Image 1 (tube, one colour):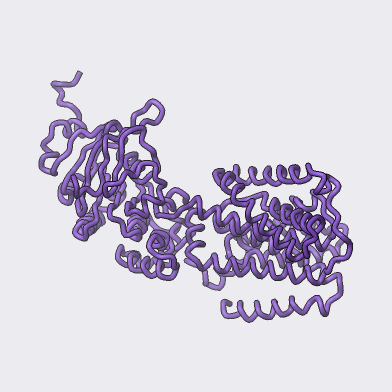
Image 2: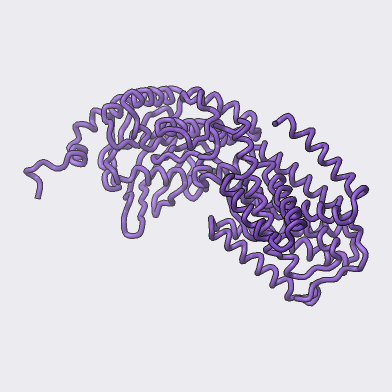
Length: 304
Length: 245
């Protein structure tokens, strides 16, 4: 099982790199959207999976990244990829003050607080004419879909690499300790305030970079798309399905969920959502800790 | 005074109108086994919470190695060399035994690998070796008690606060814990044991004893002096009938 992971990963990366050259637009779009979801899921998994701060508002940083990128392209005429990078940097920078305040809340209060934060930032951003207010922001027409595809692939792979590092590092162990018991972690010399703010910032950088690519891909963005709670919720469900706080959970959950959704939609267009919802409930009842922990328990690589 | 590891100076803690500690002072030297005894509710855990930075006293001062640690966050106090265990065991349930201990070892290394190898040794030392890969949530109470001590030891503390570390152990286990504490003292670690009962062991292992009752320091001295102190007898056994109202 473990020996298969790396050869499979290399094959998958090669397939993803070649895909836009060989597949038609429909599939390229499908893979692109899946990568956005998977990337968001990885971002969420750091603060919520490893550090245990269940957030309902990481989409705040997707929106911030998207609007910053749009602003940089339209008003400062930056090259889109630099602008998208700027979107990530702004999301990262704003995550520090937001995290400093919000991470004083715990449990359901943090979850709801972050939901409120997403709404607040959305309203604030659309209060200015420069962002197109409620109508949205239009970019110059003509985007390079293949380039956005590779950008998103790079961000998603980067998010996976970051997660692998966290899982192996002292930082990750400290996060897991504070997730289990913050006070005890403190008396074991873990600087809980600092560690969780770092985790939060990482969980903001990833959606910020993805949002930057997203606005360039669509050449248009409006507040409801940039701060879409649907996008947020779906990436959370993917992570829960795959396994919260695991390295491969967001990927496995993301691929399984988008595949099931796509197949059902093609075969049962009328009953698709009903069957999808039922399947999801069944999967979560059967594998309450997610697919990856269930597999690890089955193949004996988990702690006893 | 100069060789004191920890000085608790006239510390009071009030929760609302209730004084959990009033004017408690004590002093612990390196290598000393210091027992804090007193009935349930006497304020032992509150004192531990003050020393480890969880509860801020309403007045008084706490000095460690000559420096006031009042207002320090608990991670800074832990890094300075004060480790503690919890009366109600609090393992990191989802982590295995080695990783539980490795968290403490990270105070001295930034590498997870070397933290784990230090943790491995400590886990063997406290007798949890065969359970190293078990999730902490699956351990028995006795094993969890040992894990509490192992985690605290991983910090390589100069001062160890053991809150009711004897509670829930069998007499044999208490004996091995007692020997363990004596051994730590020989290595220069100052130990404060909060103990409610088990006087037999307290008498045997402690260099000095402080008796707390209702948040007050009612007696202090060596074990022989403590057992014959009438105030201690009163706190534990009640006043003689002739003096009762």
